[in-house]
Length: 232
Image 1 (cartoon, rainbow, N blue to C red):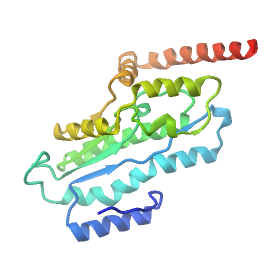
Image 2 (image 1 turned 90 degrees about the vertical axis):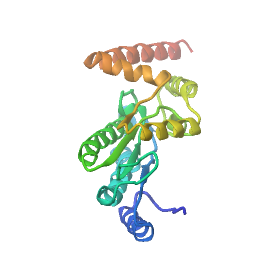
Image 3 (image 1 turned 180 degrees about the horizontal axis):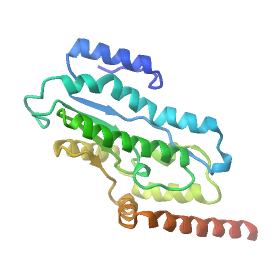
C-alpha cells in the first residue's frame, strides 16, 4: 500500500501514522528519506533559502519520527526474522556532508548535521527501549545529491563537484543493500564508502585540522578559478 502526501505537512504525517497503526497494528521498519540540497556561496543566499532547506531536509524527518517512533517503541518485540527481539527499526537517510562538511552548501550541511545529531540522540533514547535507530549516510547515490541541488556554485565548483560525486555515486540498489545490511547488524550509523569515505576518515582523523585543510583547499581552487577567468 502506498500513500502520497506532502511531507512538509506535519498534520498529514500524523494522520498517516494513525491510519497505519489502526489498520496494521504495528510498524516494523520506518524509513525517512527526503531532501533537496541547496548549493550557493553565502552571499548569494537569502533567509528563505535557509528556511526552505530545513523544511525539505530536517523537519519532515522530525515529524515522521514524532508520528511513528513513540508507538513503535511501545509495541511488542518482533518474533522472527532479521530484526528478531527488537521492537522495530527507524532509518533516517541523510547525506555524507552530515559527517564531513563541504563548502558552498552551508544550509544543506547544517540540516544534515542536525539530522545526524537527531539520529544519534534517538539511538541512545529509543535503543534502550528496544527500537533500533539507524542514521544512514551512504554517500552519493545516482539520481540524488548534487545533481538534484537547488542554486548555483561559483566558478568551476559545479562541474568539479558533479564530476567528483558522479564518480563516487552508487546505484540505488547498492545503497539499499547497504542499509539492509546495517539493519541486520543492528548498527546505528552507516557511513559512506569509496571516495566519500576518505573525507569522513580525514574528518575523524584530523579533527579541527580538517576544517583548516579544506579551507586551504577551497582558497587554492577559488584563486585558480579567478586567475583562469582573468586570463579569458
